[in-house]
Image (cartoon, rainbow, N blue to C red; front, side, top):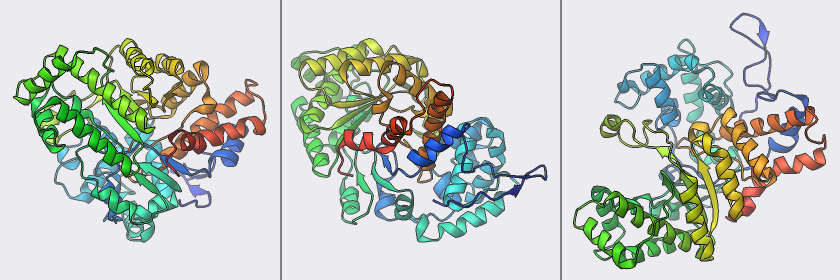
Length: 472
């Protein structure tokens, strides 16, 4: 956004030096620099999976201060703050916004070698033109400078989407959500196409009647299993009518143990009466529902996303006191491949396999996921969550390259709750070009811009634009 000249500045040692974030940041070779600036830098963004609040887009939210836009919902930063020993009152509590920001400023120098340090400085540079390294001594100056710019239209939500060339974004929406906000967004005529994504995870939670039953009531499922399925199909139709073309599913692992309609109806009735399903019943019910979602998606030409392997709410006290998605999740270690393969094969055998993207949070699964994707000509998605950083991106790219086709890779998404996250696309593109540039200079790939350049450009935008077919 703010592409300030990379003038020399005084470093902490008193010597003149380039700013930390400069034109060739993360680009370690001449070839990497050429590839990035020629083929990746100016490509638009299609943020096909994020957790941005659609209400903030509908209202063209103006953020009051740097805390609101930067720290308000960022559980990556919350984890770092806790690791540094910051009191929870200064993280998710009721402390003054500046005091929370100051706590983050004091923590920032201690995030060296964590991707947060790179993201911090990239975000300050691209949104506010700030080269100053964030710490306790620079906090007030950065706070004032950023807040002054946040008062302008350029840094309201619509301005951010326009200035970062976001051609399309897909939010994450529960089937029970009111779609009125999305209708409002679509009436605004924004240059960015904003679409909902169908995220029906609660439809599987027969192990938790306290979660499942209120949700089933909200979608109008009434008491019979057939009415439950009909209500879900109706919501699927309503999402489709608003342009939704993706579903998303956050699972420990896939499910592939199937039961009869009579058995499933009995499980449903039992849970609706308030008794939790057994683990075996939960597995059977979830298997059926995931089969249904695949069938619905295939019928309408949607793309289905499977986010597999997160160990959620490990800290149950933190979950109880603060809530979900607040930084108490981690990498899981479930066997993935047998049930994933069985699930994909069942859909494929029924000629009901939709376009699909697989994401794994455990890097040990990189090669097995990439290989499984090749069995069914589906996609192995970008490095996710805890591996969404330079090293993790390189691991994912290497696995995909070795057992599939990097040239067809769908590239980056933010998976973020923050409007300050769009430089993550830049971070990914620099990492990609650095990796390819290094291969070229090592003699492992041809030094041909005609061959390599279009591949990089396609990974940045065109591949996902064509695969999802969202009309952007």
